[in-house]
Image 1 (tube, rainbow, N blue to C red):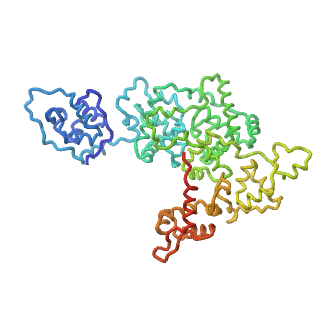
Image 2: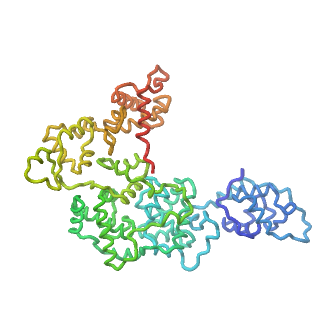
Image 3: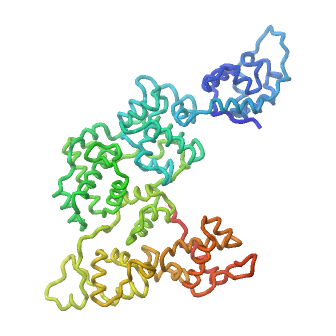
Length: 586
């Protein structure tokens, strides 16, 4: 089988074979004779009439060229039909030329394999008619009109994967956006994005992008987006925005404290004030905090994690107040004709089947339910929903949570004390029935963070109220500290048995997911090998599930197959687990 060449060069209308062959060879950076030899046309690089039979290209030549270049037989025939017939030649048609040598074509492919950088630079994923920019280098023009990182939604559309660090990958993808038709080196392109962007980092992310997506679709999207940026007027002057925020404080401490108080959340100390200023910097410039000037730059990855927790934990009221404040800053600077934020529409490229996922189509409701009352890391919550952490953060920032993650202090009182008081309860007073709390916490085994999130109070206040009314509080350490239902955002009464009992306890979701894998394998050994764990560990987890559910989940047999088919109880749990563990559609 003939190997495919690195890319296809579609012939122009009316272009003959010789002109096409020379253009294709120049594109591959080889001589026409080398390319013709690889295609099995070594004797005919300049005499296309010699391998025509009766005015048509020999069938084996058509097949060879089509297999190596990806052109259709019709395109090849049309290309050759434009060559005028030569007169006065005594040379007979050569019908003895063999089809292209696969090893020769493969050597040509290996010798001319283009890096992702070169494929972007030469726009090889598009028709050659897209070439031909004039004037200044397009990379310089684009860099002056764009932020220093690719827009978040476009990054997620390219790759929805947690292995890409947004602090470096977004700026690398912006550098890729500058490459098409530029004559600058990759190091110069990286310098246009930012002083801290390294050439090796950009090259690494481009190779990784090609490897993770498994095709050149991501490179085609970046190429088309770059040309669309050239062809459109952008509604935001990013260079002016960067000049606006340079050296500015953006928000004073007392204004931030007032916003936090109005949103019923804690204003915190200097750290949260700094995070609020960094949030405004992102809103106004769309730029990368990893590359930002002082005092907005975030060097530490741990600090960036805390900042993301701050940004995704803001309630809707506080986020709305910061957006209005940013709009006032623009108005004070005389910028009234620009939106606060903007990203190119998805229809700027022809691709509709994204390599990653379109975050604008994600329903925020399941994400809010999973985050409510859950102290698990955002990466763990995102994995349970089948999306990346950046995908989760983007959706939450576009659709802030209705309630604050850090509410101000509340006073919990019983209904009897409210009725006996002469004064009406204040706005920060919550009437809580101890009988209801005992039923939710002890009987239904809900966690204190889950209940506190529903009530809008802090966990410490709820724990103190439980102690005062004789409700035993589970210890944080030991197995009993985790004896609560692992189903955040869902009331236990909505979960059927035996799934409800299976979800109680430490690592409940892991045991349940491993039981699903075990049910699909003929033995514990094979299931443990598929999960990458020990057989004894999987056996112990199966026994814990059976004790929780009150019966055998799989039939036992003597060796060599100690695990048989599912019992009726196991089959019921298996069906319920598949529904419960299924990622939320996005």
